[in-house]
Length: 159
Image (cartoon, rainbow, N blue to C red; front, side):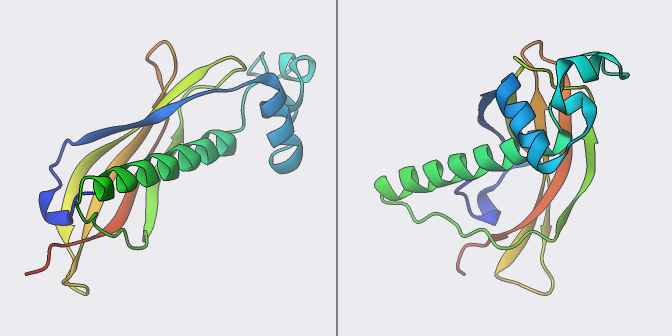
């Protein structure tokens, strides 16, 4: 995540980190941002199709972003310590195919990762390229529970 567009290889995978969802955090997030019954209490969740307390999908997405930024900053710091100049990331024009595939229950530990799937040269910004990646989260059983496809501008090497 410090490479210039030209050096990025399709298939490159970066593990962003792991996160365990606690009852307290699930409820706290839900009360503030997504107050649906199955996110607020085990008793209320038992009366729904989920049958158990589960994290808001937006909670799983927020944790993704937290881990993504932390890993990005760590890799940037390591590159500078090694005397390398890390590539700049530009804006993201958006994402596609956001999916909450399975519920994330209290006690579940998710492992988040990024897999590069495609690269596109930018016609409007020749000093930048677009990198497309699958952002994934698997639970402790290896089940895919969350995914989306992200696109971001990444700096090209100077000519």
